[in-house]
Length: 285
Image (tube, rainbow, N blue to C red; front, side, top):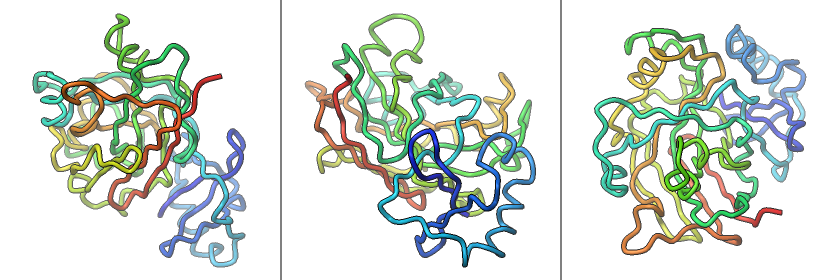
């Protein structure tokens, strides 16, 4: 299944994207895509509802805004420097263990919402990433057990303000958490839709020029290993998001001079079987 949420920001309703691309309103299912939904039998019940009701459920007009495909989770855990070519771009060593940092959940927006350049910002960067959604409480799980704890996958643009992240002291979270810095979607594909998350093509363009083109096959640490690893340090709750890192091609790695985003720039990105996003950068109020 492909789960969507649509409508005005902050008042989204649940929906489903069918195999032919048609979007249907699942408000009649009477449950939103939150921790309770993922942690219980929500996906199973939604499949049953689709079989019975999807054919006659109201259609969502194509021009309707899509929001993030899940309700705000308890946490977004991000993995840093998880592609060898990205490590080379940024001058970082290949990590011996996954690098973990957080991103504020208030940064979550829909896939095509504007990117707001923060106040006093000079170095806003892009990062196309595969995001993993937890489907069952995970604590001290093994790599072999990890797939049983997955609900599905999403496309994520892990926007970063590099000056805030790297030059202002403290942890990376301050450069990762501005409003609009976590566009998710357009849909959440359930795990059965993505049998091999380690072999997905991914790309990103800025103003029509290719900046990133790679594959999740180039990750240093794969999905199952990451879920297991993170669960050794914290309990993963249903609906939590793990964003698995980005390949080479970010502005930070440009030589000789990085070209960061400015108001008016348009960023487009996609991952095989997970759809596409488009954000236009605007100045902060």
